[in-house]
Amino acid sequence: MSGFEQKFRIFSMLCTEDYLIRYANKGLYKRSLKELDNGVTVQYTWDEASVSCQLSDGIQCTLENTLDQWKCSCPADNICKHILISILYYQREHHAEDTVNQGEEASSADFESSSDVDDHEAVQIQNIHSLVMESRFRWMIESDLAPLVKSYSSSLIEEVLFRLRYPEQIEVVDDSLLTVRLVKQEIEVSFTEEASLAKALCKVKQTAGHMAKLEALLRYRMQHGLNDTEALSGKVHDAKFSIETVRECRSMLADLLKTGLARLPQSYMAQLETLAIAAHSGQLPDVERSLRGIQGELQLFFNRHVRFSMQSMLDRVSKLYLALQVLEEEKVSAFKQSQLIGRFRSKYYMVPALHLYGLGADAWETRSGYRGITYYFYCFDDQEIYTYSDVRAVYYKDDQFSYTEHYGSFTPWLPNLTFRQFAGEEVQFRSVKVNEEHRLSSGEGAKLTLLPRTGVEEVKLGKYMQDVASVLAEDSRPCELFSAPKERLAMIKVARVVEHRFNKQSQDLILTMESDNGETLDLTLPYSTEWQTMIKRLESGYGAGTLEHFYAFVRIEQQRIYPISFLKGQTVISLKLDAGYGRTGRFGRL
Image (cartoon, rainbow, N blue to C red; front, side, top):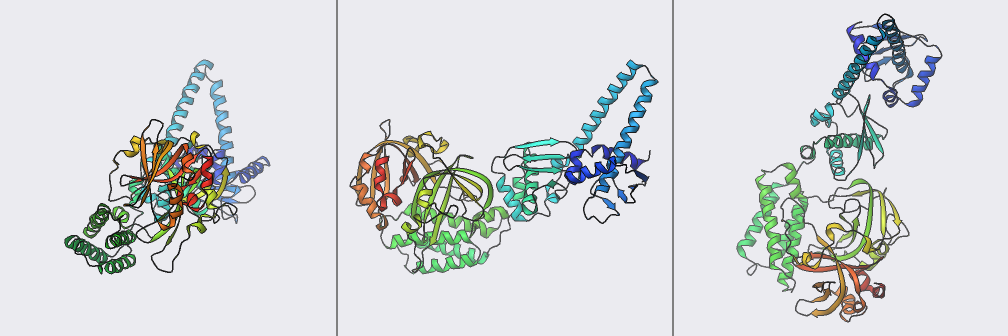
């Protein structure tokens, strides 16, 4: 037996039914078996690195010890039945030959000793087969990822890395192919012995199939204790920005810190606007946002507004100055630079499914010139808060945003569902896109299903369910330069509202809540002309006086607690949007 014939013999042993079907298809495999049953035969001519197969029907094929390289005289572009027939005929002939040889050995030796030898050989063959199988797929753990992902774009790698944040059970079948099944997504990827993602088999086609192959490989490696996130992150981010704009912004902030607010001219506002426009042109979105935030704080200072905060102003200036200094020095990685630069538009990635529980909605306006409504949801899948925001820039005079109009409009996912209803529903999303901050996209393709709403008392809210002492405790989370600030949100169980008063000095309505243990907590509602109806209703006690044994969903910011919504049973009241527009009658059902 020649050297290549020995290799081909081992290869044919690995060509199981599953292996051949995955490379071709089930129909082609069955047709090949039928041709063999009808009497087709094959003659083999062995070369140094290939075998020429002459079929009795006149077709000629050339095979190697892999299905990645083959030739056939038929006009088929893809793998054909003649290739499968050549392999299957060799398997049958070889198996018949082995059977005859084993019969001859058994008749010429002692039966008992022959059985012992056969058992010993069977164990050896099984061990050798296991070692061969293990070594064939060792590349999935030991190979360098760089050449494997060379053909992948940075956006595809980034989306796969995002998917890895979500738990996904995998099932592994180690056979002639190593198959990784992504259980939740119901996708199977079969890897060959060749270290190549292009050679992996997946029924999902095009871009989705390419991502499934890489995700399956990375999750398989994770199961073996390998984490490739950091190594791949460097291939994703390519930070490009205007270094001149960075220097100009830092110089201006340095002048601000030297001059001080007391001697700062109001013309400084125009300079900030000019720099914000320059930051936009210089591909520095987060710098632009920070400059507009500082501009908003300065406007409060020049207007001697009661809500101006020196600490907030100092925090904004300090963080932006440090970020600009790091960017100017250009000593950090492209990944770190991209975190400081930010994005004009968030990237959204497809998530197979999300089970969400509505917690209410909050209307807001920023000092950097944006207005919007944010809808909050608790996710049962990863125990995190997800949001959907309807936002508009209003820093130009002609731009308007009506809270009432947008709150009453229909959602993009279900044509008969308003955002007002959406805020208090329990829903199931399929194929929905989300970004790194757990914000939902309104893009096409997502499927939304309404579920029977569970009473809030039965929902386990994990880390977000807090008592009064936890809410009042100092926020111990570190302020990181290379991460976006996160809202501090909490759900509090309230026994009753014991007092409501309006602070004329700070222009805030204060609602004092009491827990079942007798602890009290002040909730702050800042006054605004937009919410004057809601403030007056709550100040007069209209509806709020009857509130007992409910839950308050709140945001904690600078040691103040701002209520977003009240919940009880299946009912949700978004304070600004429901109480502010005459729907306080719903308080009676809490």
